[in-house]
Image 1: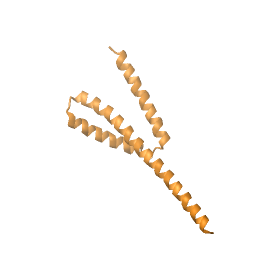
Image 2: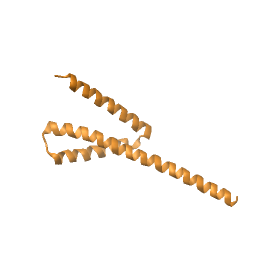
Image 3: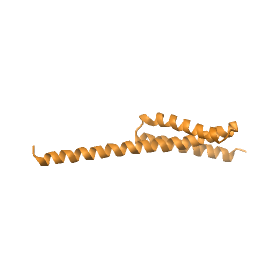
Image 4: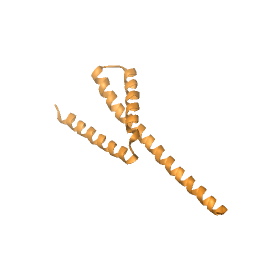
Length: 102
């Protein structure tokens, strides 16, 4: 095993490490973004129902973001994107219902 094999193995390990880091970072970013959007929607609904202030809104946003972040922790990037798509479809249906309802 020569020096060229060692350099090739080192480059391969570096490339694999960069790929794993990118996937992990993308997954964490998607989890945070999904959590923030869902938490904002749920917190605004709760704030309107309870007629509470800004502090309660921030509390519920942090709470729901943490819960959704933990829930999405076991999912892959593709599964998180499918979860986001389903959430967008549900929100679209809710919007349609609100527009049609008197």
